[in-house]
Amino acid sequence: MKRHADHLRQALTDSHELATRFDEPGFPHAELELLQGWQRQRLSNSYRDLISQERYRAAGDFFLGELYGGLNFRERDQQMERVLPVMVRMLREDMLLALAEAFELQSLSLSLDMDMTLALQASGWKEMNTSRYGEIYRSCGRPQDRERQIELIGHLGLELNELVHHRLVMFLIRTLRGPARAAGFGLLQTFLEQGLRAFQIMGDGTEFIETIWSNEDKVMQRLFAGDQNPF
Image 1 (tube, one colour):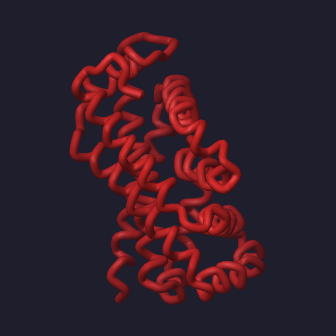
Image 2 (image 1 turned 90 degrees about the horizontal axis):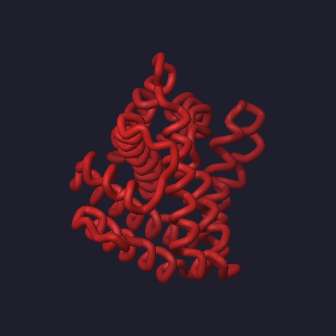
Image 3 (image 1 turned 90 degrees about the vertical axis):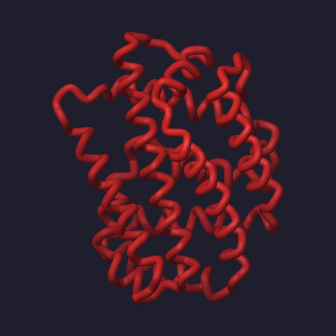
């Protein structure tokens, strides 16, 4: 048994369990959309200078659109669960680790967002700003999970940065394109291809990864400290 297979299975299980909460009566979908939209805009603003550079644009789109893309993950996760036994057999350990951390990041981010969504609903606010965001952020706590979230962003970025330099990895993903889409796994295949392609375009993405990793760690600390200008 490959050692990262269980990590990947657990990340998918956690994501699936969280997704069931969306269907519960009274779930505050509008508040979740408000929160996630505000956060995506904040990230876009924080890293505008970085992701406006041609070599980093695709990687920025991948993180904001694929790993932090609202509710569009559900069908892709279902495809992943169906094809998981094949993935475990075919993929190298480093590729399984990258997938496991990608889905863990997605699941953890969603869990944190859902807690903040409930706090936003309780507040009665229909608009978001920096001060309100900081208040809700602190009220939900979970500092260890916040640290893990940022750590996963850094780890995943470095793993993808390494994988794209292996010709066999890129060849394998391209080879799977036709069979994957024919079998109904198109969203999953697109996710894998876009992630690797985005990092391939960057060449060496160390600057991109370390900039975000370092800055988001500082943002987290400032938010917990109650800084009025955390971003």
